Image (cartoon, rainbow, N blue to C red; front, side):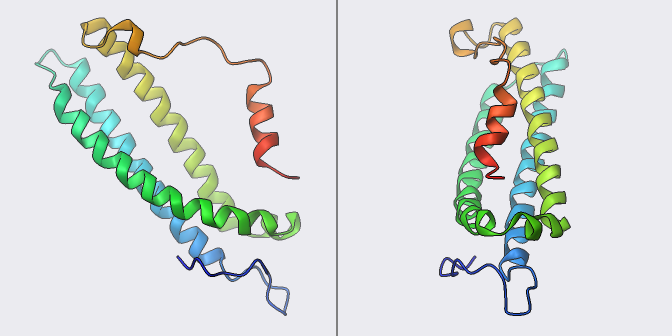
Length: 155
């Protein structure tokens, strides 16, 4: 990642911004960490579904390691966000690599969240987590997703 990039997002020939390949690389690195997170959640789900003795500390340490890696990757993604938002909507729409990786990330994150929620419920049923430590499953406000998109898309 090059933190010294200028806000100019196009070259003189009008081609897409020169930072796009680096952005795609960093998004793919984030996707790899998300895939590892999903794999860990799947392994934990299988361990919780089995009749054997579940070892929570094994998964706790692996989660902590992943959180550190997610934090470091997110620092890079935040840097690219400003430059990406400075691109014109036409230019952003023309970069299919970024759009595809972002869609893949959204799908991965939803799968991780769903599986994690199932794992929390399994832990609760086994009595391994006090109910006060489990987040509420109250429904979000009716326009929650629409407002979220509106905040993050300056269109």
